[in-house]
Length: 412
Image (cartoon, rainbow, N blue to C red; front, top):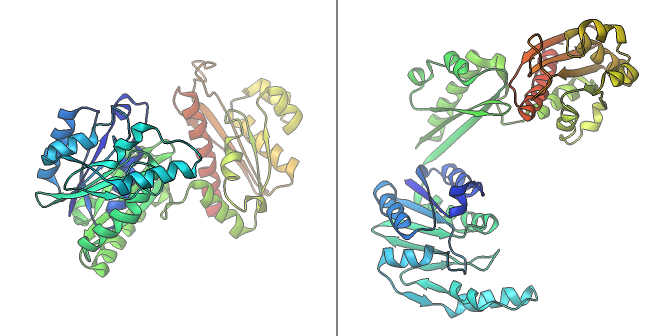
């Protein structure tokens, strides 16, 4: 069973609103074995909406439409659906009564314009809206199933989960969909693809998607089938190949964030950590403490932004900074040692760098970052060269620091 998702609204085309509805619907349909083959986004224009509807009939068994069901003049979806079906608008008193009750419950007077939301194209069936005023619609046309939903995310999600998923799951029958996510960091999409270049030949029935993100490349393997045991066998084969070829850069095979992985490793080893941050401005500490229970292993965080702070708070010798610079392997290591000794933690992590966009030199350009790691047994540092974007550099520096910590925990 194939599906097309059509999102309607000028705000989606202008970039003022992120189209999170389409991704949510796509995820829910995929989970029940319905394969999404198209996602179209069109403005509030009759001709473009009709064109998208006519194309969807050619491509898909199921068409899910969001947006344009409000009470104002620019909400065109219902009139266009009526024209698409060659149907008249029909007033539904029970829908009007429900909308009126909703306003009374909120202690407000219902505007006259909301009466329009009780007028629906003939040949369509209303989908109750438990979260708002605009009812959804569903109908069959040319043997294709249509669902028309509000654009308000909470209203759309409720209808998808309460109506669309149960109905389509029953129609989809026993079709199986399985997927697994692997998260990587510290490697580009192209290099990762080089490592996995034989995947499609060795496991042709499984789809491998490369999803670049700010923190690294996410790998997603997925497949459809009729036999659950066969699908599981193929997915396991895919996972084993990926881990064999790229396991050194994979920090999670279960969808966890890197700070969650770190939390498990520290807890399992009964170790504690503190962090000293310069260019990341507290981001590493923020990420670590996002994990419930992090107080068991996270002791302290210091933001030592200035050279004076590095000296006063972390006891980094002024002579060392003068000789090597604040952004150097030596300073990063001294910061890691300083925070470990200051806090009494088992491990100290530090980061110092040039986040940008200014402050760089030919010898030390913007994006240069050093990460320090210190335990009782050893003190080391890593050098990274990121981009000229300040926020990007902060995020990648924080993730790189956590990944260095992860690797050291695995070999300790």
